[in-house]
Amino acid sequence: MVNALSVGDILDVVLTGVQPHRVLEVRTLAGSAAGSLTHRGHLALIACIDQGNSYSAEVIQRSGGSVVVRIERK
Image (cartoon, rainbow, N blue to C red; front, side):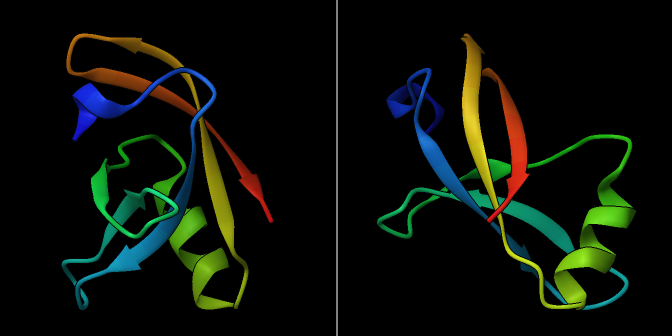
């Protein structure tokens, strides 16, 4: 799915799995899985989603299989 992403694409950030194996996943607006998020603040983001906040991720850079996104609260 990473190959289909372009700079400027907007993705939904969703929480999947059950504790203790929860995953921050990014999905296209059509609902297809695009990958998972890995970053230093992931536990804080999980807590915010648990509190009812929603987030989107904008693709700001793509190089091969690596994608950099900017996460923003909706």
